Image (cartoon, rainbow, N blue to C red; front, side):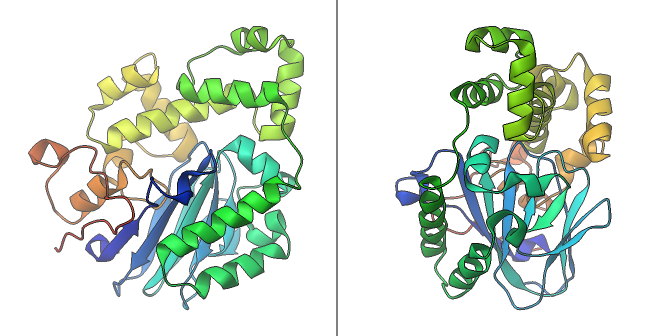
Length: 303
């Protein structure tokens, strides 16, 4: 696809869009004519996608599941791609696993990809329709936050110990042992393992693995050499990093560093889009990490 025809908008951090911890959103507008086929990369969040166009974009996983553009993607999904045949718009909403457990029916996320109805019920279609009736990205962001805030009032809570362990795994970039975290909560390792898996969907060990991978992927996307990225992300060495990348997404560090994808975080994607369009890398003059201006579309780089 022609990445120079993609605009990306993120919420204004000074506004209401920052009022629910654990929510990260981005709006994508594609005005090109080439078919879309974007490889998405595992991320330590549950991802909700809303297809806001008229041409039927879809999400596919390695098991052959095909969901319409209004889809949910669970943790550690393996190889997932986003495809379409024409211009359109898409809203990506990422939820921390703890928040996802509070507002979604996460039992439906046992597989890789599922339709939004499966995790949100009939409300998914109403929200999707409201989003498509709205043309302003800021209004769309606000709609999602009001919707999620309403579900926080009625859904089940997550054990404080589970929330704490996820927070520490995230803050420590996946470099804390399960035994140490269990001791900090006062729980046994077995109790932590059981409750964490039941509420988050992964064991603490696999959650830490995913967070380490995400840390390495972001560093690679911003131009950090693989050996240095491996060290900063907590891998024993570069071969260890290579094996994990192959295991999680079946890609090499070079692939991760140079391939644009819809799921990459808002710090890295502008840099990747510039590279894909033949523009300068961070070392050639971009202000790393190439962050877009809040509330505005990312700069287009024409080929």
